[in-house]
Image (tube, rainbow, N blue to C red):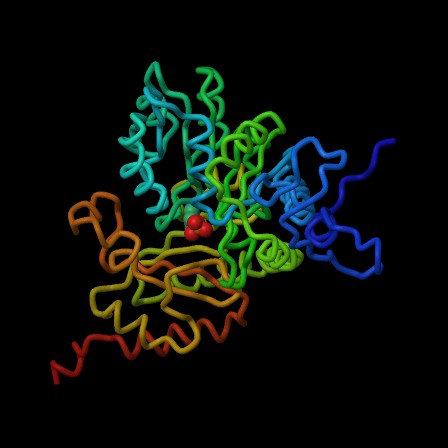
Length: 391
Ligand SMILES: *Cc1c(COP(=O)(O)O)cnc(C)c1O
């Protein structure tokens, strides 16, 4: 019998529940036991083996959302990504990495790979040709991120997946910025999808977690290696994350809508020079984004005119918080030059297109008029007093 595919919000709410057979409660019970009887399970049930009831149930939801057979949960997004690297790379192997990449991933590669004798190349750009140019005979894995942080560049997912397949190379994507609501890279031929579940999956800035989604074949290989590193997510947090993910569909769609409106409004603002958002027709890869994204996400960045002091602007905001993380229901803002890209020199930042006046904006679910009012009043307060000085 062919069953009809469930809709996004039904999957978010219902798929992968732990049934409460004892009390018939409406939600998943939480199993915090670290010991289980040897009974009829292939591998001993143990949290670090990724096979407790709550972990397995939530992984079914994540797998359904990413159109894969299986998934795994980790204590952080970085634990998930490092599990992929450690499972598939060994001494003498080579990794091709996109040049515009989450800072923590760049640090991991630069600091840890030399210790293991693993080679790597950062691409020159994010076009498929740039990936082709970086491949070596010993390349085993290609890692991409799209949309990227903080410039929201778009990588051609299918193009990179096809290139990798033709050379027998595995592919992994950091799908955090899009979330499974807006982008399912498996449908374009990517092998392994990684998420910082700290972001849109959690959505309330109160959970640190990571996830991987892939075929049984790859998930089994990763699980076998990752249990040695011990990076599983605690079952209490798994349960919290399950609750968060029930609303992920409606949250992210509200953020998509808000971000698009904010992007359009900011691009017409006299104190803003540039807005980076894949859902704007002015984005150089708008056409490509349309082919691989179902929604354009809640992340954007914009550049302020020289007559605005960026730090003053950030701290004059009343509701939009100047904090480090992203993707919560609350809007947040930061200056990449002072945070994620602070360790680079101004010249290095300029080469990457990250100016000292660039603001990254994680758009929440607040009423859009209040967000606009907040930005307007903060811009006014942050105006350098050019007019006053003239008088
Ligand atoms: C936050 C983030 C990560 C790292 O996730 P953690 O949960 O902080 O370990 C990786 N990639 C992207 C794009 C992120 O935003």
